[in-house]
Length: 239
Image 1: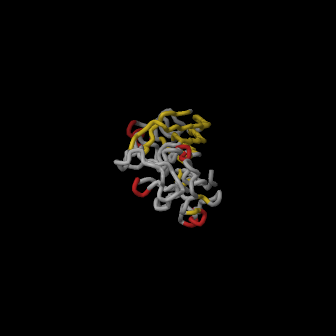
Image 2 (image 1 turned 90 degrees about the vertical axis):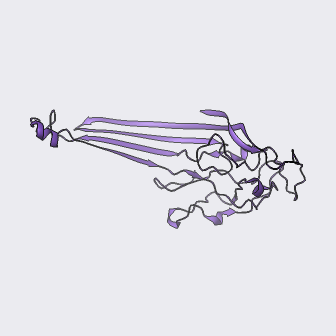
Image 3 (image 1 turned 180 degrees about the vertical axis):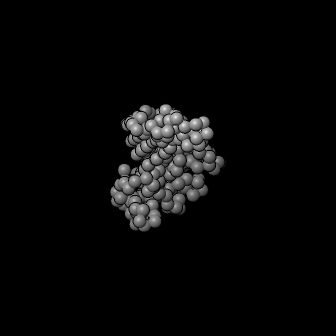
């Protein structure tokens, strides 16, 4: 499923990126500071597979299990999204409105794997059941007709995006003043620290000073939004 014309918050007064400091590119509106605008330049592609298993009325036990594998990619939510894309991201523009494709990545709150299992067990005591089906009204009310139900959910964690200080500004885009995020370069393909360390990221796998951009495109050559997942659920590797 594809979604188009989704909201993006951009700064219309952003200059094009440059490796030269101070940035020689002119401001579109030199007498103004930030000019934030919500545009419809975002897009998202969602793909999923769902399977379901039902086992009904075996010795009073009914069970159901469903599994969903989902992949949701898009360039919405800004440079470091933490939730599903709101209609408007107030006060936080994207770092580089000239290269929105650099923000394409996993949507933060879409779980890659999700398993839900439910079960209902009818205790075999009471009217129309295996044992003590002829109980009087008081006993039937007290011990007859009981059922037990449970729901279990296992899912992989949400995606995270590491950020670094906006003072590391290789594109000379005045990120600190504009309130935009800056992503670090990833030095390897395995930046997760693992649950045993008590930290989500292995900071030694990141360069806090991103690579200079290719003018006028990407800010950081190897930084990709939302490359990691939190550890809740079952053990797993990076996507």
